Length: 346
Figure 1 (cartoon, rainbow, N blue to C red):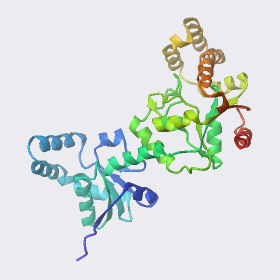
Figure 2 (spheres, helix red, strand yellow):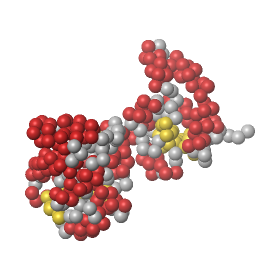
Figure 3 (cartoon, helix red, strand yellow):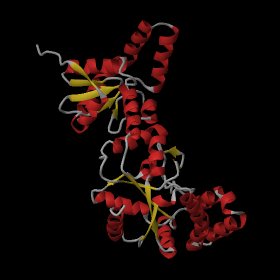
Figure 4 (cartoon, helix red, strand yellow):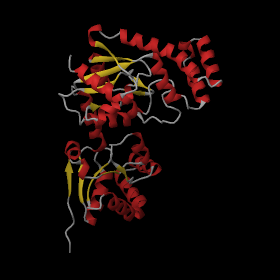
């Protein structure tokens, strides 16, 4: 008779070191997973959202033993399905498992998979240990350079190009699923939870080396409704900033390409959200331009507000930490070369 495979406990750090070769299963409920999960984890929920409430209520109001019995009653018919799902996730039958804090749910799944012949690793401390690890990434010191520039300067495309060329870059707007303005959802993006934004950001930060420059785009602390964690934000605020200076004509052309095709009603609604800052006359003119299809005019009106806000934010930084750099705004390769050479001088 074949011996039952043993399960082993590993720390979250140990799992991260071998994440590419050790598939991870999150056995928490779909609602817990949606709220926040470890990047790359696959949800194989032991209980549905409703079942977890039932078990939790029984645990609190009756007893631990009754809750365990109820858990087995609820999951009894599901075990073959769990094993099949895990075989699909880890055909080599080597797998890691976690729940909220490394308790009964992951223990039960690990036991069943071990019985089937899997080599199973349970994450010590569960998902909570990943959250603690996440916060440690924000507290590390990074050699940050911030890329600024007025709206439409092509900052995001430039950073994406630099990332493709092997430079250390994190696209905060991509992680937050927001372009950082009233129009930031682009009428299609849905922001992750704050917890998931932090999880994904920390996952990228783990690969950043301390010595090479780490390029981040100049952002408010909030990107849409998601906040940049304070320790990282404080590093960004004290970092050197390169202010890309791109001609207005090119900025309008860039924004026309990005926003000109969007649904007019979305643009009008987004414009009206900033009417107090834009001003009643400018808001009226911008809405009229949208309705009449004069998208370049709309963009020029909106830029009056956004340029003013950018200049105000720039003025709050120490003058000796802001460096202006004239750039094309439409040639990422040339602008990248220019920026890299410029950054090497300070």
